[in-house]
Length: 455
Ligand code: UTP
Image 1 (cartoon, rainbow, N blue to C red):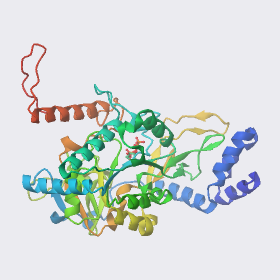
Image 2: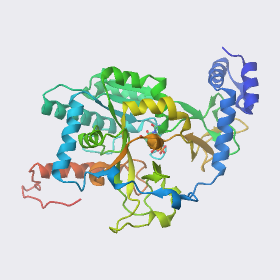
Image 3: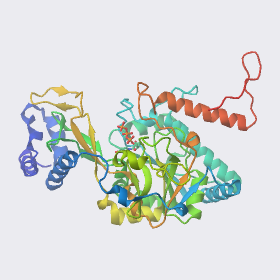
Image 4: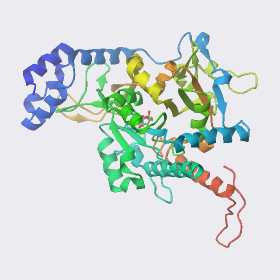
């Protein structure tokens, strides 16, 4: 194991030797833990990371200057719509999707490494339950949807099929997630088809470019963003696992969308029939300033442009049909071929942009007291999963119905949107619609039929 002197010298090279300032106060065990953590940080990379974070943060985010000239909506031939297409087309996409699922060629991949700071719980967001009568958690709802899509595909094509579930976690979410799944018998999925793996972590940095100590014996580390997926796929040989299972198509999604359709046959079928290597589901933006990224083209290349990168004038532009020109809201539901993921991990991952997230990072002050800051004090650097769209040879987008497919859980109920209540209502409303479509009638306590509700 590296000695304190070695590690101190490395940190001095990186301009980060303050990380050892409480060394003399520590007992042997915490000393060893701190040393092990610090020894794993490579000095040049650490120096570069800290400098880069502070420099990137100094550049205020805002509308990109020459964006107007570079931005275009996706070409119409690249965009399908499950909302506007005829029934025959929809059934064709769905049939193809079910066929690929029945052939065991489809996997789902959950991005569950986030810290869920806005929701404010201390456990992984997937373990959260939004107050449904069934008390099901997000993880359980997703597991059940996987079982159902396997069953439907199997019934249609007379096979017994599997949709493997890959779950990317982080240092924060891996342990509790494994324990949760084990205690619940993997929600009756075969545990060999649930593959959990861990993404990397990066030090959180002050605005002055100093790595932060969250305790005297621990550096404040944060997961490297959902775009950390591509390194994590390599670190844990996930693409090799997919290959062994014969998986060719991967549906990647976020943990917090209670309406997510796992391995949605319509989306899979649409992407496969279009010959896409990469695809995204989108919903029509609700209003010009809605804080969602827009899937569009920059310099002719598909990208997600964040809402704060577009000026209000551009966000409000309207097309010939009167609708918003940039109306394709990103909902973090992506389609990738295994071949595309392989190419990204081998060739393009180092080119992915690092984004700055300014957050409240608990720290120890000069006197060694633990401080929970009231205002953001630290920078976390993150990669984004969608930043690989630019490398696609054949990118497509599929518009889907927001009310059926998108209701993210981001905030606590103290916020006005994207909170447990909105998620709960969205799912209950969906189940209500499904019941009506199946011919159900709702009766009051006296057995009198209730009028149908809209929304
Ligand atoms: P968000 O950007 O909403 O972040 O993640 P979050 O961590 O869940 O919540 P806040 O911002 O701290 O409140 C979108 C999706 O990306 C995953 C999350 O788990 C979620 O599914 N994610 C985020 C990762 O898998 N890894 C990360 O490093 C960050």
